[in-house]
Structure formats: structure tokens, C-alpha cells
Length: 398
Image 1: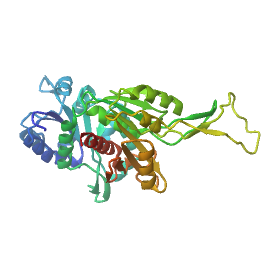
Image 2: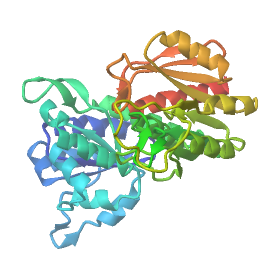
Image 3: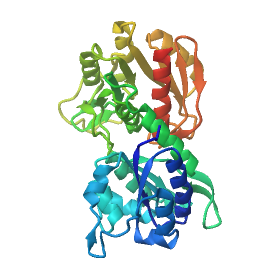
């Protein structure tokens, strides 16, 4: 599925640059047209001559060379996809802040195609708060980050930070282009994030949901050609929302109304939001003063959105719910599947250190009403989203 695809490969100054040699060979073998842009530092690890010979195209490193100009704008428009592999910690930071001091960065800022990044660095650099922040910023701009691998590092230590192997990257690209139009013309509703139920003008009942999982699912559907409506609660971190029809809500009632209004025209609905089960029976119009030793709040149930949509669901629609459990996980998920008239339930457990609110990874088990059950390994949420969408498509086509 890579035959004829135009792939612009960026190579940066990392010891993992040697992997670009095999990566280019594999891409060319699959029939891709590969052009390479290197940072000046990358030339210390692998020569432009080597990459030029393998790609069968001139390798570019400078905007100006021998009185000629490398047109970074046209390079960014030429490609079907821009892949930066490896992307060093230094280049990652420059991309996140919009710096433009090399041809590669100029092409990145000019690119009109999807951009995929394969980081490579030592574990301490990979886990540093500044790097994590830079990755969040880049993802919020719509870039795709491939997960790093765990193993021996250039420092001699062992841990996370290894660039994904070339074979893994090629498999990912093949799947990406295969799936691009799988859902063309389909309409999908996704919910994400928390809801905040107001107590008084300054306080609310809420939860720790970041919205990352739901937004990753929405983007996966969008990348496969679907027309996606995202009903999004009050999230704090920057999230990649380009190309999505976003409806911002604050509380459970607003989310219910938005979902109800949209559901009838949808082919698929995925309820990934962490919706409050209860809200204050009365909202104080003034800030509640701390003049008593105790405070009692009367709470009332919110409307169950998944159950409400399940009661309206047509036979051809696929309705997906989420179950975040702390005990009796499987039993609770199966009960929810039946009671809410859902087609699929995605289960994760707060007892799993890799899952839960605010994490970048998740581990899920998926159940469907036909009796199917499938468990998945721990993965970054972007890859979990791919698994979920794959599962929904397989279920719908069965």
C-alpha cells in the first residue's frame, strides 16, 4: 500500500540516524518515492551520499547551496506524509516552539501533509518534564508521535527512548495509508473529557479526565475519512482538534443535549467522556462561606447518556460505551453492555497503573453484545484509539 506514496523523510542528529539507512531501503522496496532532508548535525552520523544512493533522490541539507535555493514550501506540499525519524530531543523542542533555523524545520512549518515523528533519545531526556510538554504541544498541533521502544540505549543504559524499528515504522505507514478512506462518508459522534457540575459560582463536582483518549479516538476516525462530531468537556491540556467539528460543553445536561441532537444522523457513536453520575440538587447563586464545621450537599442523579442513546438506537447504528472500574471489572462491564443497549463496551481499570485519568497509555478489554471479548496490551492512547476503531469496523462488517 506504499506504492507511489510520496514520503518526505527528515533525519536529525541522533545516533539512531543509522536506522534511516534501513528505513529508506524498506520504503523504496515497498514502492514509495522517498526524498530526504537532513539537519546539519545528522551528517555527523550518516552521510548524505549514502541516503541519496538508497533513495535515488538528492538529499537536501541547506536552504542555500551553490547559489541555488531548496524550495521548502514546495517540498512540504509535494509529500503525502512527512516522517521525521529519528527526531532528536533538540529538534523536538525546536518544532514545539516554532523555531526555523534549518531546512528541515522550514519544511516542517510549511508542510500541508500529515507529520509523523519517531523520537530517539536517552530515557532521562525522554521522561523529562520539558520533553513531555513539548510532545503535548506537538500533538496538540496535529502531529502524530510514534511510540518509542524499550531496550539498550546509546548511553549503555537500558530503558525507554529507542526509536521505533524501521520495520515497525513501515508497518505503521502501510496501515495508515490502507485505512485513510475506510470510513469515507460515515458520520461519527465521540464524547471526551469530564463534566463539571456546579456547586456555587466558584466550585464544582468533577473528575480527573484529560480527554486524551476520546480525542485520540475522534482523530483516528477523522484520519480514516469519517465526518466526526466531538462533544468535549472542560479540558485543561492542549489537544489536537483540527479537522473535527467540536461542540464544547460544561456539564452533563449540556452533553446530553448535544449528543441527543446529533445522534439520529450518526452511523457510530462512541461515549468516551467521563460524565458525572450526580449533580447538586440546587446551585447556590453566591459563594458558599466557610462558616460551618460541616457542609451537606444534596445530590441528584444525572441522566445516563449512554442508556438514553441506547433506547433510541437504530439497528444499523453502532453504540460504544466505556467502563472505568475499580472492582469486579468484567462483571460490571458486561452488565453495562446489556443494561445500556450498547453494541460494544471498552473496559479499563483504575487498578491498572498504565490506565486511568491523565495517563498517556491505556490497557483495554473490549466486549460486544454478540459475546465477543478481546484484551489488548498496554499502548499509547493514539495506538489504543487505532485498536478501538479497528474493532468497531470489524464488528460493523461482521
